[in-house]
Length: 75
Image 1 (cartoon, rainbow, N blue to C red):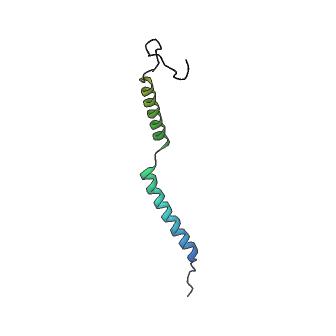
Image 2: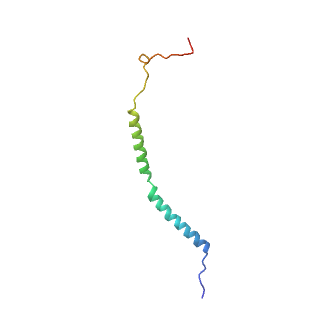
Image 3: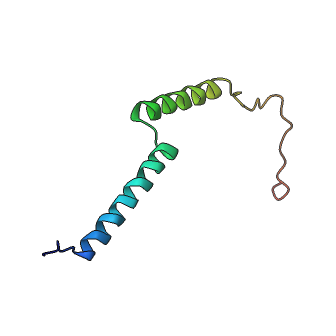
């Protein structure tokens, strides 16, 4: 009667690897996005940024309408 030998270290490593794979699959489902989804999101953000920039007001100072500045130390 001969029994099969089992290396406990290899069994522990295999179990740990399987646990990590299960956790990784859960993280991919929870946090992961495909490359196409990331590119679509990036393009939408860029479009939103450009539209926002297009509606900014150009703030220029018209010196003819602004009050004169005084320098208290200079006469």
